[in-house]
Image: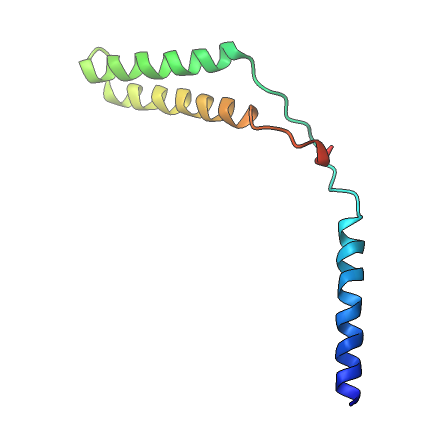
Length: 91
């Protein structure tokens, strides 16, 4: 009988704990991410395309081509990450 009462007491306290957790303010970030300008994205796309074409055609050495592709690829990834939606609940 004691176990049943204890289990009922624990079961009754769980919704209160969940409500207390949900009523807390969301975590505030230490930094704010601003979207990068469209010219940054355009530069990364054009640089990636031009470097790839020049590398494949043999106008640029393969090591330089891969290096430039890596840089422009990282620029493109950074521009995509910076335009992710900002949720208003986490301000």
